[in-house]
Length: 104
Image 1 (cartoon, helix red, strand yellow):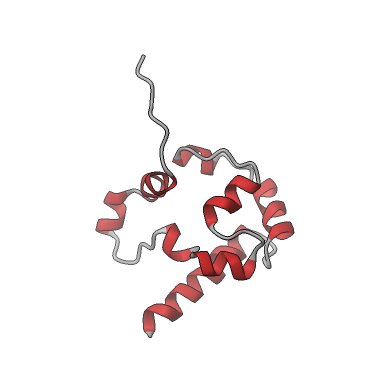
Image 2 (image 1 turned 135 degrees about the vertical axis):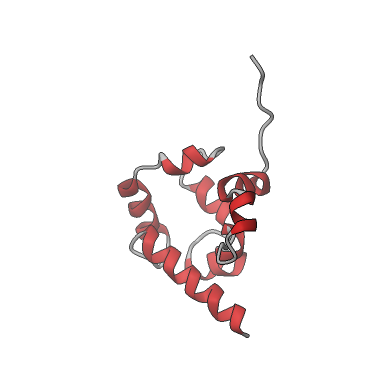
């Protein structure tokens, strides 16, 4: 049985986002571009997205780990720790902010 080496957060983001999809879909935006350090510092008590996940005790190492976080649990954490009521509203706000910066 082969052991997997631990992934860095940057490697995790690339794995979660699927580099092939990013190359094929020109509308694809990487999570670290959406949830910038400034966005996280402004809208949460965390300085970056990695710290945000870690503070919530979300053990994220693979894409499946993100998908396996129960929506209700993640939404409650986001409601408590950010300016947003749930993941969807936080994602939409980050997307709008990113789109605004892209137009400049």
